[in-house]
Image (cartoon, rainbow, N blue to C red; front, side, top):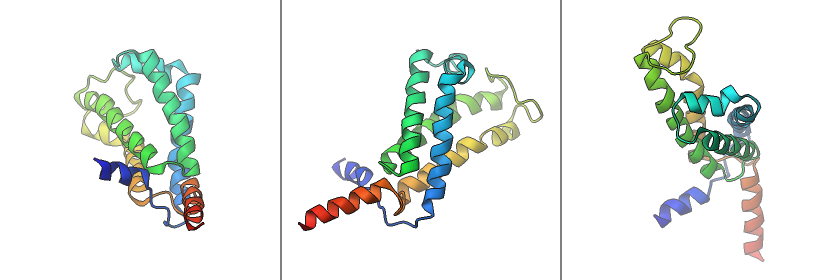
Length: 164
C-alpha cells in the first residue's frame, strides 16, 4: 500500500510541454461543470435528486466543489495524479449512474431530443464527453502533467533544496 501511495503522490513531470493542452481541456470542462452545479439547480441538486442519489443537496455541492478545485488543479498541473484519480472515479460513477438506465430506457432525466434516444447507440452518443474526460485523466495520471506545471515547479524546488 505504501508503494501505491508513493506512486500516486510522486507524479512524473518530465513529459512534453504540450501536455498542458490536455490539462486545459479536461480541467476547463471540470471547472465549468462544477460551477454549473451551483448556478443551475437542474445541473446540481435537481439532477442528483432525479438520479436517486442519497442526500442530493450535500452530494451535488460536494461534487461541484471537487470539480471546481480539481479542475483548477488540473489546469495548473498541481497534484495531477491524485486529482486525475478522483476524476476517473467520478466519471465511472457518472457513467454507471446514467448510461445503464439510458440503455434500458428507464433514464430518469429528459431523453436526448433526437434519435437515438435509448439503447446502445444512445449510450455511445451520450457517453462521449464522459469517455473523453475519463481517458484524458487516465493519460494524465499515467504520464503526468508535463514540464509546464506546478508539479514540475515544486519538484524542481525540492531538488534544489536537496542539493543544499
